Length: 254
Ligand code: SF4
Ligand code: SF4
Image 1: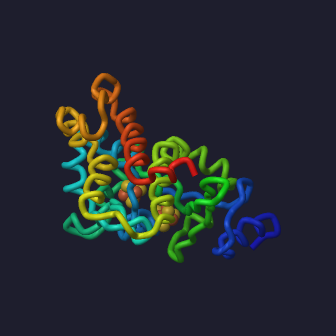
Image 2: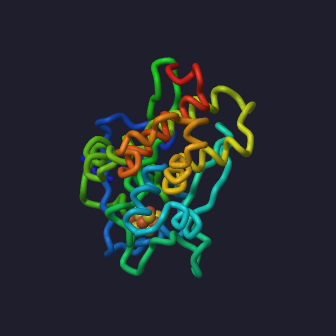
Image 3: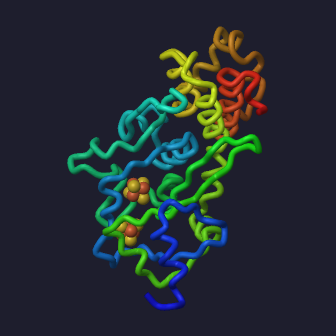
């Protein structure tokens, strides 16, 4: 350890201490490292609705096709709502289904969790609203930390275009956190399926919305808004508002 990188090294060792915006660390991941691709062989990648939207569009799939081919669904212990993970066991050799010989084959559209790594983020709902905590995750085989590039948390987030992905998932995260605070009651299998439909299976949700009967019950007048028919992102933000009303009721402003 040299005196000038002391602060960066201590950062990784204090794993339980959250990072501040100007915390510094060294990291450089590239194809010349012996660990290249290793972290993508056993990934636990939670996908947000925005991650799914970006990936399914890039791959030219419907959301349903994407979910069936590449993911698994689990019920979140906190909110009792469904979460979607990349499934490393849907390929012949276990690993991220998007891992190729030369690395990530969906790199420009990789999920938020992959962008942020080696930083991880946890969020908490407080009286002041949602508060994020950032941590540095140092896998023992990861050689990126011996790299020659120095970052602050802020410059890393900017470099990885993380904010766009974070923006696309914040309302979803808020629903999960707030619903968890309300306790386990009231989330049955039907509600879980509806949440999964509106968040993760946007193409099917759009189709269901076009059925007048559903519209009458759930969202009168929605098809007058052409954006929701044409634009996935507008539909996703509509889904968030719809789910906030459905799942949070009076708690949604809190
Ligand atoms: S999406 Fe790309 S970066 Fe993320 S785990 Fe898969 S191969 Fe690795
Ligand atoms: S340097 Fe770290 S992040 Fe990059 S490939 Fe190696 S283990 Fe993965």
